[in-house]
Image (cartoon, rainbow, N blue to C red; front, side, top):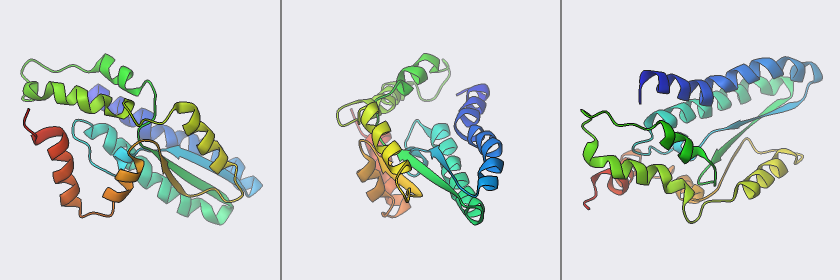
Length: 182
């Protein structure tokens, strides 16, 4: 990624939640109630090769959501972090439109794997967008919305990975997406 693409990734995925929170929290505090819903990603919990800056931006969303939940609780404001796994969307097409590999890149031999990894979330097992939205809205409107929810393809696998030793997960993910032969 270029520096401008990296800045945009953090602006869209991380800084945007701070701007929204700053705009809505004062009125929620005044009413002593409210719910902020932030969209993270399983990529914010599990390192995925070729997706580093997106994962880092989503990891920041996870941390900020946890902090906002702690800081807003005394005022009756709840925070719900949604960490989707594979959900049908345009995210890959949008990423592919800006993906370019410099001629001098050391990753030329891995370019096919970069594409494979990028589109992995859109394959078999991806949750349809309308089902994802329906489930998130149902939880958000429930009497006690969860502070964290994950759903979509591979969400359970990623939840399991969170319980494994970190270095084992890095080895597994590297084996799947980077180091394998052929």
